[in-house]
Image (cartoon, rainbow, N blue to C red; front, side, top):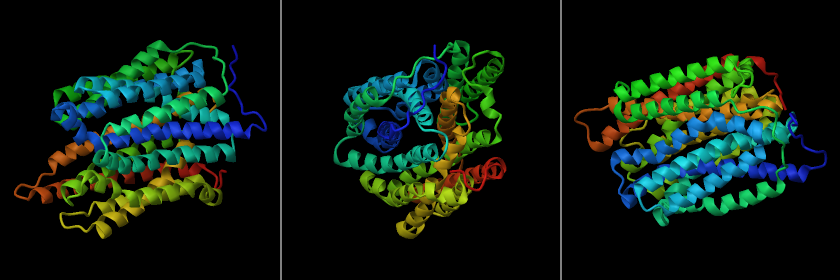
Length: 472
């Protein structure tokens, strides 16, 4: 069997542009879905009779399946063909989205969310790997990866706005039904325009897949349990400990097997390793912005879901503009300088937001720091993605893509688990309900700023010194 990756044919610019649009739209659909669910949770709870504990599984079921199957899904694309995995991932995502929108019970919805997470675990690394092998190394690939990285942050911002509008004006189900026509169009486009890539010689590392999947599931489950019951609860300690042991066993196994699920040579480059660590810390930091500021806007400032969604527009709009400006800025200053500037601005914006209180005015105390934070996110995510797949051989594109997505997923889970514990520990006895919530949210945002500061240190130590001033 052919062991080489398909390379873009000269003069086939139209096909490459179609592939780029397909990849970005597929990834945008995943990111939007995650954000829309956050603003739709109260309506989902009321509609299907979720208990407070069960409601968390709307997000948890998806997270466990997504995080647990990521590495296996990524390597499957390398071995069995990225076109096949792209189509399979899209099919699972569309079918489960329809099932969620039609769900008549909480159990059916949670099961469908798990299937949707599995579809995302196949789809997300397949899209990034397909993009990497469809564009030759150099300015073309850099621009394409830049757009991909920007999609993550911009999609999350748009999702918060769209989720609030849909939940208020239509139904929480509309956010899932939207995926069906979009997904069907993407399936047709993939079938029509994505070139068939032959399966590669080799086999899927089943022991490695079992170790990585079970380890990731237990680790994410432990983090979620810690977020719900505290870091000292026995279930969270056992789950995190066992998951960590299985992941350690996975790395030992990967160092010895002939055809690893995760080639450890990906960590040989300090820039790539730094990019994975920085992405984890960056997502751990910004998750507090989306999760807790929404509660502040509704619980302290008294906004409706739609108003709260629209209140994120300052971050959304400037993030889009900043993301579009990454490529020209990088040509002049280099991706590493743009990345460091973006993380620094995100840190400043988050620290500014952490000053909110029960009487903070939206414009001066929320919208303006949102602008700074939005610019930082727009500048940071594209260079982080580029650094995470830089210099990777075509045969390892899927594994590198899986690491990028795993860092993204675990970062959000770890950050949220930490912040929920901080939220619970920052009570102020005797304060009014709004003052209490404002204090807790401000404390969580201050911790988020600290995580972003750690991310900046990693970027400065691992990425900036090793890159030339202009890389595209």
